[in-house]
Length: 535
Image: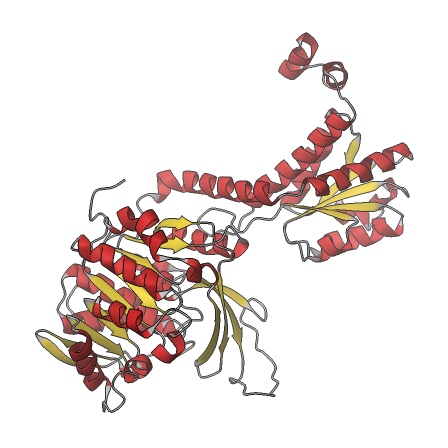
């Protein structure tokens, strides 16, 4: 464990997969509408969550940060943890939640939005979890942040208590009005204790108005909440108007940066990320607000709340910021990338393969093996096919199966509809490999071999894909992350496909009682030939 204070801030709260839908306007009851394209289909999956968002923006500005709490070992959780790793956000997360948090977000043409949240594992965190699991992680920080949004109030209060015991300043984001937080997150007494425990309280204007309904403006709200809860500072965010601060040595409003708004989701979260950086840098309140406003403005210029391109986000913030010069630390992933990027990709693959192993169904392997044995008994053969990188996996798998007692040949998928399918006869088995399960060329090839009477076994990354639905049986080879800086090139998915097929070959080898002599007959040369002969 690192020394005390090696992380500028740690946070506990919502870590959410945001499913964003673009709409012409936010609909009312009994209305219907057509959605816009998000640039990646009708729905775009984005990283989100109040705490993960603001720590992401802080990390994009070079602040060493960490996050703790609970998620599930599901696709949504792996998606979010991959984003943490890309930005160098250290994580101390239990994976025993029932389901990771998800939000459905509808963004209209003006950039306004409606958000429906399913807190999932965030709402499972207890005060005992915080104390028993995460107290040492909290003590590594120079500042603690938490929220009133999805995290149970008792857990937030305990995190604040651990921080205060260690002399660590605290910041609380009051993200939703109390009427929306209660009673789902706890009771009014615990909410009051959480807000009083904040050294810096950052409510939205709508949330602050609950406590001071007669306040005329954001500054009056900041003053009223500071007087009520005794915080060292209260910072009220006020949308396109900017923010207002009531603190020792400064009271006033700071106007927002003027930008074209694409999506207001996460603007307050980005603001808080900038505020964390400013406080750690020792900026005065007015300049701190300028940096925070710049982060909020950079956020609303794009779809989604998390800085997926941290270098671009950082550059835009510095372009918008009009305060004194800042010396920001290097991006967390930058200096370590050359040596550690390889190991990081290795770690992603190991985590994805471990998750695949935990959820793999032995019955699915048994069903696939039975299909192959039945085909062989009737004189049928095995063919293996795929498009793109899975083509290379298919060539490997055909060789592996053949060398371990299951004769198999490679089937070129794109050639299949130009005559290559002639190698397939009625009763044969075709093993089809695809990560997405939606590749057009593979669909055409499989339609052809099915018409010839072949059985199809899918090795597929998406359980709800065309391939999985149209196969006679399917083996799960799904991963949520590929590894690498972009997370696009097939890495972990290829490893998953290879191991799933290797596992199937091991079952077939065992079923037929394959011996060293049998292996040597098929592989007499090389070191393996010598070992199979001498064993």
